[in-house]
Length: 130
Image (cartoon, rainbow, N blue to C red; front, top):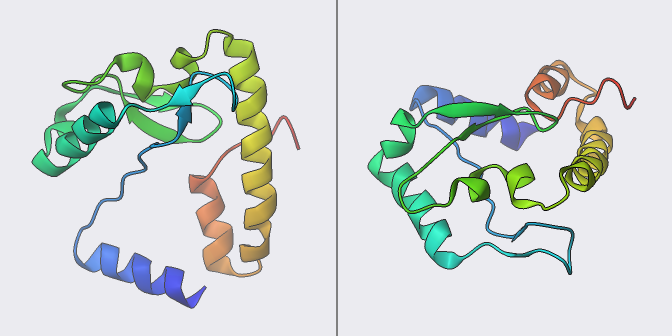
């Protein structure tokens, strides 16, 4: 879209980084998990703002194709990788695949041009599900 192109251009021009911060549900499906603690959310934002997140050890988050920190000051490590916060990791995998499939399906409307097609490499990857 036009707005996505403008955003990408501005981010490139100003060497801007973007962070995805989960401020919602963790530890299970809706009704079994809980909201992320506001103190943990504030500590994640603090690490972004003070730059300490840049020095954190990271790992790749499968399915969603994200790089996540393994630890941040004042944040339980299980909150940084949502799979670790679920008591049943297989149930997490099932829910994650369902969510990723929905994201991929919804994003398909933006892949009618070269820019949209190029962006799919940065989103969820479920080649075995397709």
